[in-house]
Length: 248
Image 1 (cartoon, rainbow, N blue to C red):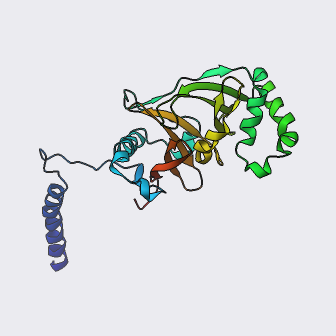
Image 2 (spheres, rainbow, N blue to C red):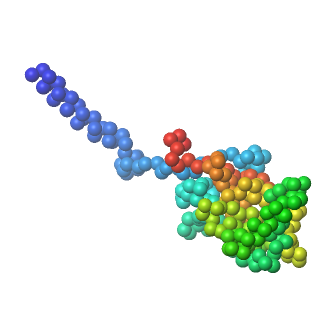
Image 3 (cartoon, rainbow, N blue to C red):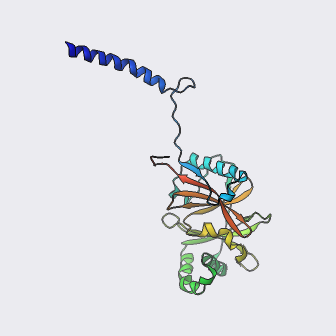
């Protein structure tokens, strides 16, 4: 009889505790249960701490909101920097195709732009035939747009060389073209140093009327935003991918 009494008391205790526990799980607002939304991306300090200033806080905060709204994994960013429906703060540029047959000199410059000047000699002779074949076969495309990429108040003709299709073969190279000679402006080549280096997916987008460069880092699962200057660029925003991690 004693063990039956103990069982009855335990059951009664459980019935009393469960409602109280449920009440603790309810939110204060209207007594409804709420769950904190999972954060997919987290803003981190930029690589260049001197650029961690209030003027960049708005663009960093805004893009953190974009990343957490779309929750795109970093691997998808290499081919499509998705903007949420109705997003008005950021917008993508409109690119016009260029005929590669009329821009072989520009294509050569683009292919060599990622190399240090002292190592460029002989590189085009080594890779030129393969690059031409890729353009002829539609595996690469060339396009141009007009945008003030270095924030000096004047628009430049920015060109891009993309691998096609992007999926499984992502890669894009940017440069500034001198229209009169259809060649790269080497004086502005350093503006794209970070986005062109080991690039597997970069983009240029406009935020509140200003152009910024966007890049993802595969090895570190990070997204970066760079601002262009007349003689280079600087990392102003950095975001870490969190979804799927136990610790956030």
